[in-house]
Length: 125
Image (cartoon, rainbow, N blue to C red; front, top):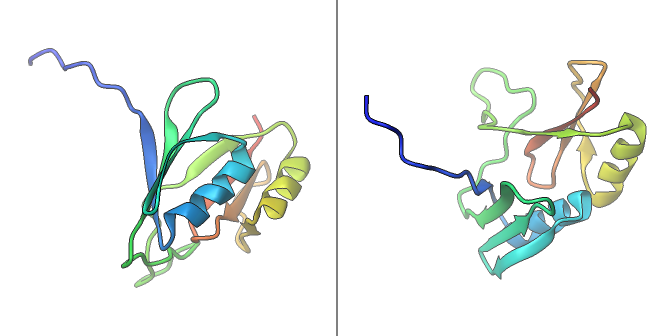
């Protein structure tokens, strides 16, 4: 097997009906700065380096269902965000525009939905 070329993950990209709106939510949630800002594409930079988050407008975007059942739009991925205190971080997420999901599968994890319906988890170690 040949040696793999060097690759660096630079971002996770989330689709949404409005990239600017979703990026603004994650900017409020995470406090990250914008490094690229176009009408249909926004990129946020992680302050300590590493992979950032990017957002693209998709006019055909279909909001995922959490939890998905047969025939529902499935989530393709979700973000896990480590926090020191679930209650404090959860209040911040709600103030930023998140919605607490009805279904909560674990005691040490809280599932929220961003404004486009992408689930994300706040968790404590």
